[in-house]
Length: 299
Image 1 (tube, rainbow, N blue to C red):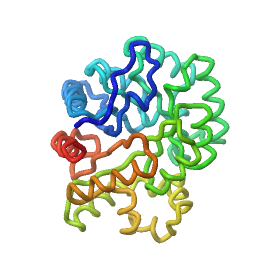
Image 2 (image 1 turned 135 degrees about the vertical axis):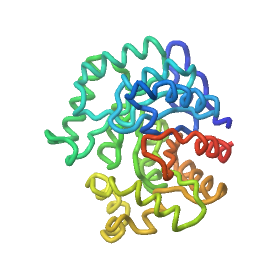
Image 3 (image 1 turned 180 degrees about the vertical axis):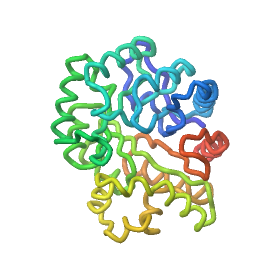
Image 4 (image 1 turned 135 degrees about the horizontal axis):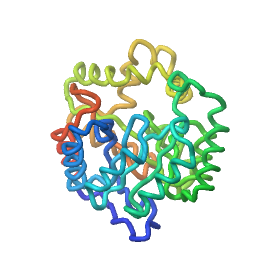
């Protein structure tokens, strides 16, 4: 797969549009903390780089510590947190970790930040103001704006992504949201929505796998409120999600249908699409064969 990825400049000044390419992989499995899996995870990262993916996005409250082994195991791919919760680590600590990776791997680590969700954070309070203060702390720690991105959904945080970061990495969104985000951001900021992919052609099996993956997110108000803002109804976000919702936030089907859905995000204004493969295996698995199939679809 050739996705337009450029090698990072030695001084780390290349933009994410230059280095992340058009497609990346979003994965919980790549952030594994199990020492017994480290060799397998590193080998998977190296193969994803060879397959032509421009970025690896580490899910589930990841930090620079999770990114470091993958950066060591690869040579050009961008590695980003998607996301690091602002409640998880103080800005000064995040800044110090960023500085270490930036020195060792110039231009290859990107700090993806988000406010997480009230049901998951005991001291959740005034998330937007806290995020602004966190960015102030990163400024004090000399983390450059062009190496940080925000998990923005609503217009207010998208504008913050435009003004205080390199851009936005919206999670669990639609092409319509991508178009709105691009309009809010303007032409220059980096926009990299996440998209879940089910490589299954049978509609019932595909939607069953999709609903299993979606279930945890429908309990989180940040996502359900965003769906309602996009025009979905309360019934769409109930009972595991309607077919309409599943078909909007997942790419499933044969190669041409999956490629068309990915292309819809690019047409809507995405610079990069972070692809999360959903299958019947564990959420933290390393679905190498599926990643290879997806690379062939994108070629």
